[in-house]
Image (cartoon, rainbow, N blue to C red; front, side, top):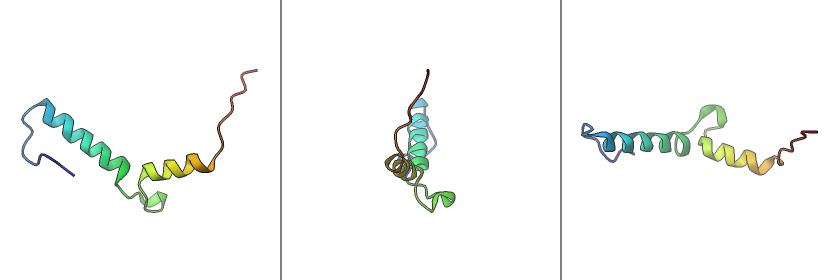
Length: 58
């Protein structure tokens, strides 16, 4: 996961570390409440099984 395991040397290293963590958290982490699948996979399944939301502003 982590590209840079040494102490961060600047904002660039910090930004990369945060981006790597967010990527792991959303795409690779297995979420127990979702049936041990990553959150992004659960969201994809949800969008394929539900219809579009219609707005009635009238």
